[in-house]
Image (cartoon, rainbow, N blue to C red; front, side, top):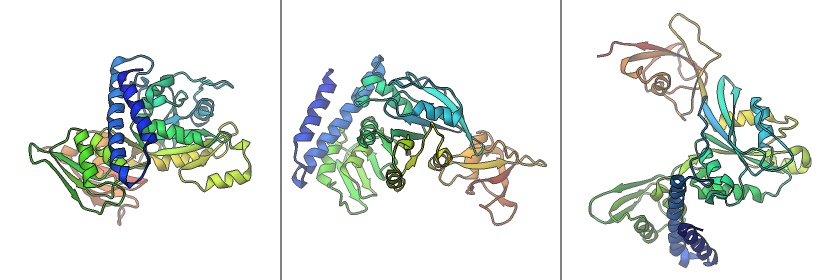
Length: 372
């Protein structure tokens, strides 16, 4: 065990034996900050050192409009699900660790090409490098959506174990980045400004200790949200990845209707049977919704739109400028205006500028000017 791993183990043991109350909040927050720093150092060491526990991930070219990663324990049905969604053959068998590398496949849905990655099964301790866990989680980090595949017949603790491994590797599922501004300066010490009341345990004293742990002794901090200690540490670290997550409960053919009714009420869950192809349509729709995708149909002048090959955008409020940049970076310098048909405009068509916000299934025709 390396020195860094020993330090992590010691801090985790100290955190576990420390009582959780108001008097120890600051101490626990400092332990969390130290753990976050050490895990980042360990990740950096492993990625440079290479080997089976390295963090460089699998060399799979990103293709299509979005990428979805299948993450889960061995033998939960990820390979069968990949075959069901994409038609790509991934070896499936009754024994564990059938898949030993990342297997890509492409799913076509609503005109979009969605790349599905079947990643090898992970085990407890994956974030520390066990069982090629760092390579698996590094590949998951490149995805636009992580689908955690669970076996309906296994304990629900599997869900929490996978979440912990992803969390320890710096992946935040179904979270948004903290609304905290950190601006370093040459002198003047630490200045913390609270724009909203802090009621979740973060005080100026705790924040100051965490900042000093990250060697930020001259910095202006603006807290624009009611922040927890964990989210403040994430803001100080600055190397967190925020990815939407979807929990896919496979093998529902092995549970009762009463259990299925309970599962159906939970957020971000899609119950399926990949072997029997039950509820696959609902899963495809959930992938589309979670990836926040919309279709825009380009219309060349004097021609009908190409409804078979839409331009797929991911932004919450995508603009005409983002659409142009998706086509080619050289369009905006010669952009004059655009004609838009669809639900985003009042008139059909309507002349709009580059800041106009588009909606799903809008049709757009770009009019170029002369480059000055």
